Amino acid sequence: MPAINKNISHGIPASSGIVIGKAYVLDRHHICILEHPIPPDKIESEIEMFREAVERSNNEMAELRDKTKEEFGGAVPLSIFDSHTQILNDPALLQEVEETIEERGCNAEWALKLLLEKYENRFSKIHDGYFRERLNDIEQAITKLQLILINHESQSLADLSEHVIIVSHDLTPTDTLQMNREMVIGFAIDGGGATSHAGILASSMDIPAVVGLRNLSHTVRSGDHLIVDGNSGEVIHLPDKEQFLDYNRRRQNYLYFDQEVHAQKDLHATTTDDHSITIQANIESSDDLRHLVEHGAEGVGLYRTEYLYLNRNTLPNEEEQFEDYKKVAEAVTPYHAVIRTLDIGGDKIISVAKYYESEPNPALGLRAIRFCLKNPNIFKTQLRAILRASHYGRLKIMYPLITATDEILEANKILETAKEELGKEGIAFDEDIEVGIMIETPSSVMIADILARHCSFFSIGTNDLIQYTMAIDRVNENVAYLYQPLSPAIIRMLARVMKSADDAGVKVSVCGKMAGDPRYAMLLLGLGQAHTLSMDVHSIPRLKRFIRSISMEDCRALAKKALELDGASETEAFISREMAKYMVVAERSDPTNAGV
Ligand code: PEP
Ligand code: MG
Image (cartoon, rainbow, N blue to C red; front, side, top):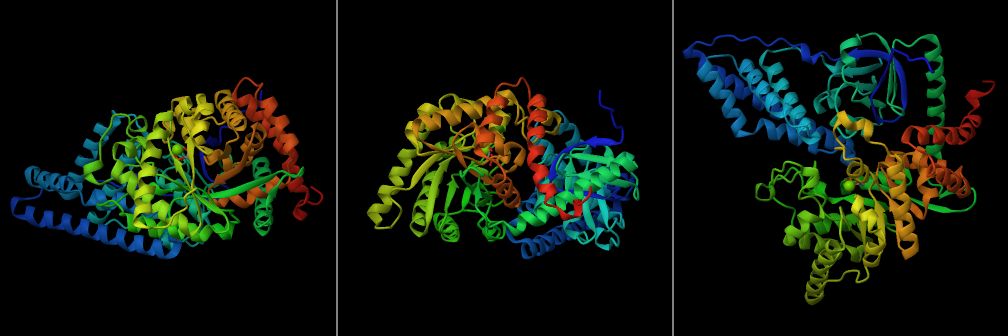
């Protein structure tokens, strides 16, 4: 039986890479808030102080937002600031704090503490990843106000003068964007899932990160040595000599490999036995387009257009959307872009009050195509904008969360109306625009052969397919252990879709997180006809390089064997052994490994 190392914590890998260094523990949770009585004649000025703190916090957020937009463009989703601003501008919340100050005669930071306790009690009864993330946002916004009110010199990450790994209970956008990035080499965070703010920011900054470590920040002290492996999700606290040497070797290999793959980013992904695989990018905003060329993307396999609709008080009109999609169509030429229609709902909530619906199970609610079919005018506006933009480059339309044929038929009817209208208005569009669907629910897998008769391509959304097949909320860290891409259930689902598509002559791509991970790429290619993989831009050069080192024959043999295995751990071990053969190829070409 392998030895259990007590100094290794297992979290969720959020941003790839390995770092070894000293910890810097952010101790925000230990600020001490006390209650002070406020005499009646000072209540007014206490409330005034509270309002000033809100204003200062809002200003700091707005400044950071601008700075981030200038520095990162679309690489960091600006919506992360909007959630804080929304909380700090919620009239009900502000009024409640002011009433507590007045009625209880207490200081503002104490009133905020009481409010936070109330939210924690209320949200603790809801076991939903989305609400946990919102509670996290509320905690961060309230803590920031308390720090301003008590004039607390918060640990300033801007003043860091040596290389450190940030260890913290959580990480706010403010922490991340104000820090001296030259000095921060990694993150080890107690809370969150791979899709939490800390995870999104770390990967857009290309800094290795592990999240969901539960209470690591309670055991680590600033100055302790740490290893953060953002590839496996392991964090080693006070490594011994053997661990240090082992991870140092892994790190050197990773760095060398990373440099080498970047230099080859423009080479096409052709397997050693001559099968051509198209590697595309997933984008969330037209601002992301500038990263395509930098990373060697061959078009866009998934444009998550819902980000255009989030964190605003009005819906984007046809003209705004047309301009945005036109930019995409032009930028991807000579390749194509797949524009996914609005996938709102689940953990992506539209804030336009009229359309906002609170649901007990948002992941199973009025999401994606269901929302669009219930709001045909919103849907038609988007379809008109996509059609108009299709005149300026190669665009394809993709419907998300399809579960039944009727949904495609109904959506196509609205598409036909949009086409007829444009025709009558004399507006040019691509009359033969391809229409495909996302396969991301177990029901769509089971009837893929039928669905194939009604569309021209499938794109497998493994993120949701795993969520819905394993019955786990994909943003809930408590059930993250069941998020198993290699579960036999998932492998069989994938095999079934590929076979149905193959039989029907429908093209298949994969655009979930699995597509960008070399551990799964061999399986995906070996299972069938997935000749396009679409992923986050940072994964592209590495995956292209990996595919150039493998043969389709080996992929098929691997997939055949994987289909016979009993469970995810067994399959994981088998795939790791197979992968090691290819990783050896990478290591051998590393001159720094000579003689090792
Ligand atoms: C998926 O579900 O795998 C997918 C790509 O879509 P999203 O992550 O946007 O739900
Ligand atoms: Mg999805």
